[in-house]
Length: 279
Image (cartoon, rainbow, N blue to C red):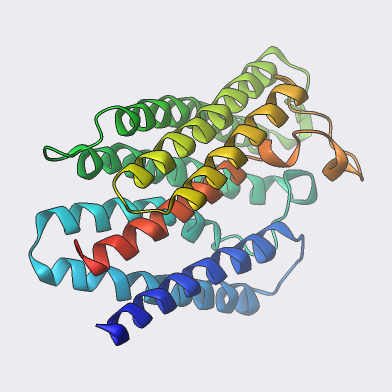
């Protein structure tokens, strides 16, 4: 039992390490050769996938449908960041070319869909049974679905813009400042806000069900609340980027993939729970 617990903790630690590595390699602008990019992506996927499988396989082999459902939901919540490993060195949009940004928004669209599936499926195992949480888990699900709907539309708008721009580079027009750009900023604002709300609700639901300690759950809820305050302080419109963009209030918490960090953490917790079973 002790060795099994150690393996689960080791797998969870590797998943958290993989997240930090993914943030660093994706977020820092760099131009790698094809071979280096492929090696970085493969290495990250092997690290993340191997650690996740170490938690998923015991749940799947158990034959317990509850554990399987928790494992699937957890895997879906870490998949968005796994997909972002396909873009090593891309950095922020202003540091990438049009082709790279087209790939970026396509991957963000697909990642958002996986996130939505995870937030949708997570509610059922939390609310299941006589002792299930029928308040916070449904609130987390509803908030998550609203967030995902908005972000899917936002990503679709940006994909369409990159396609139009690529079709006629001679008459390329920036999306910035147009009504469509302003509408997409509003969608991204509310998508981020609702994702943070979903994270807080689900973290507290995890606490109710004994999946997460009281202290950890409240820390996540407080971080989500601070992020929401940061977004509101920033306002509906995504600010113009500058060399000191990281000093702008609410800028970092509004970056499209940053609200997915805490759902990733919840996904790891869910995978550990699925791997251990109902101990």
